[in-house]
Image 1 (cartoon, one colour):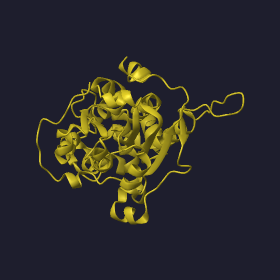
Image 2 (cartoon, rainbow, N blue to C red; image 1 turned 180 degrees about the vertical axis):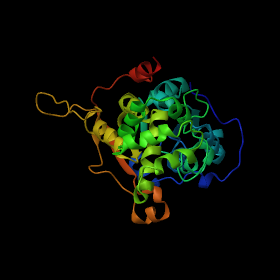
Image 3 (cartoon, rainbow, N blue to C red; image 1 turned 60 degrees about the vertical axis):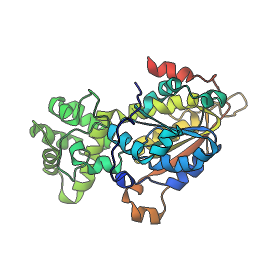
Length: 343
C-alpha cells in the first residue's frame, strides 16, 4: 500500500542525488494547466518534480510524487520540504503500478473536480544515486552486494537470490529477453559455474571470463540491465501503468515518458499510438483511430549535445508525449484502473 514517507529529516546532497534528464523539455510538454493535479510516478531525487512545482504550485496545482525506493523519497522530501508542508507535493511510498489505488486513497478534491490528472510523467531506469551506491548492487563498476531491488523493503528476491537458485534456462531467457544479449548461453554457463555468488565483483568476473576485452563494458551493461529488470519486474510495472494511464489522465491531459532502452520505448510508443501494448490500432467504420491517446511527439525528443556533455546518462534517453483523447472516458474515482490493479 501507499504510505507517506516524510517523517524523517535527512540533509544530504539532494541536488546531486540524481541529475534529471531533459528537465525543461519534460515540464514544458507536460503542463497544460498549472492549476491541475500532476503525478510523477518516479519521484527519485525530486528533480523533475521540483521543476514541475515551480510551474504549478504558484497557481494552486498539486504534484503527487511516488517512488518505491525509500532512500529516494527521503531525499526528495528533504529537498522539497516547503512544498510537502504546504501540501502542494503529496509524496507516497509505493510503486507506480499502484498509482490508481494510491490516487483514489488520497481524496484530492481537485482530482474529482477536474476528472483526473492533468499530467502523468515517468522517468524510467535507474537514478544516478542508485547506480553510484555500491551497496545497492546496480553498478558493474563498483563492488557491492548483489541486491538490485528498487524497493529494499520488498520481501521479493534480490539478484543474489535469483542467481543462486535459478535454472539455466531461466537465466538464458532473462539475458535474452531483458538484456537483448546475443551470447546469453555462454554467459549463463559462466555465471552458474561461479555459484554461490555474493557480490557484484564475482558476477563481473564470471561475465568477463567469457567476454572479449573490447566487448566487456557493453556486455556487462546488458547483463546488469537484464537482472535489474527481472528483479524489479520493470516491464510488468511499466505495462500496468501504461494501460491504467487512460483512466487516470483527463481528456486533454498528457502522458510523458522518459525511457532509456528499446524495451521500454517500444511499449511507450505503442500505447501512445494505439492504446495497446502490441501497437494494434482500432478504427471505426470511417477509418478514424479509436485510441485513448494522440501522440504529440512524432519522433522521440532527445537530449541536446550540451546536456549529454554535462550528463552522459542523458545520451540514451528518449522522451515521448501523448495527449488523452475523448475516447472511452470513464467517470473519475480512480475508476476501472484502481479496481483492476487492487485485485
